[in-house]
Image (cartoon, rainbow over all chains, first blue to last red; front, side):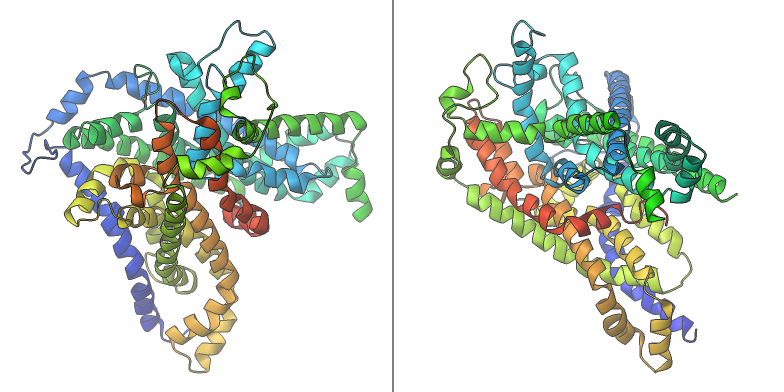
Length: 294
Length: 286
């Protein structure tokens, strides 16, 4: 096509506004975070270079414990999202009357303001009058009220369940799209050979959607690792730190106590983990696409 | 062919029962908080705390939906703010994303792939990681405690997905169209405005809807951190302040939540066909 040179120039002119915007609001702050992590920045006017001190400081605290907790929290949440979401997708794919309505009914947690969904969970977890505690007592599974957010172990699970609830619709819709893209002839051929429905699910559908499942779990891993709203609204990291993940810890250090330098050091550690996840993600995607094409 | 498909999709009765049971459990998990929240909004405050637990409210009424307008003084303002912020975010995102998507979708240039990858990498970082420098940035430009403190960062994190969706859509428009226009002597800008934009309109609408919903659904961390003025608070933050009080008036809080999510719900039902297409586009290779 003629005029290639002017076309390239035109492309850059079109890209510049978006590029500048992302550079100013994402790239620059990212660089600034690294810079700040070596300073004692706070609300004061002056900031001093302190070298690795912030990093040494965070490893003196219970930071290792927080990292461990973050990984357990993220792992449990992502696994549950994938299992429930894929299960839901298989069910919603079945040719049953009403499935169009069921699919719409799956969407609300994803679409409504996240904070509002979390308020409703806050009520459900309430010991004296929440639904879960109420039903447990009704069915005799618990003698007295259970205040889920008041104890470390139950609060830990409560925040996970709410995170799963918010993440499931996206996984379901994504996996449903993957299931629908499995070629029909495969099912027909197997069906002609007398394969049962369950056999076809296990031997055709699940292997065929495996690459999509890997992609989805990596996307979900990154967003779950970054999860903030749920924990902050339900427990603010408590009781006594039992739901403090790395993001929550960073937020309360940086914004709560206004220790920007120490907060930035924590943010840098988070960025390192995120980059590792991203590398893992790209490797998985390229490996999978190579396997699919050969 | 039709007949064969119909046969393949024929279930035995116990399979149907099992699947409906599974769907019921699945949807109960998804909808339980909404059901519970709605029932709570109907219960009179005095009966909320009665034991033993009752699922179905006695003396239920829509009274909380009336009284909440007085108990949450800024309520109408919060809803307006939510809409206002989301609308401005959507407009800014479209202004930035439409030209950028055109460049990615219709023009071949060196480094396009890695540049697109760079945009998508933004999705990796949540706002929380970048809060400190963003806070300082907002402070030095005097944007703290204004609408802009929520709009500016909100836009940045919605750009990547929007570019991805829209450039995928624009790639599907046949190349022959702009080539023909080019041969007829049309310039780049003319092709963009008169050939591609009209054809990409459905895609642009999908991107606008998903961006709006994203902006509406995710108003929390920036609003929590960068704004402390009641008159600029979006709904989630306004209600959060209310939620954090010692004595929460739960039935009104739930009523307010329902009024707050109503716009999103109406959008889902009206536009669900576009939504599913938009939200899962690019998810699975064709």
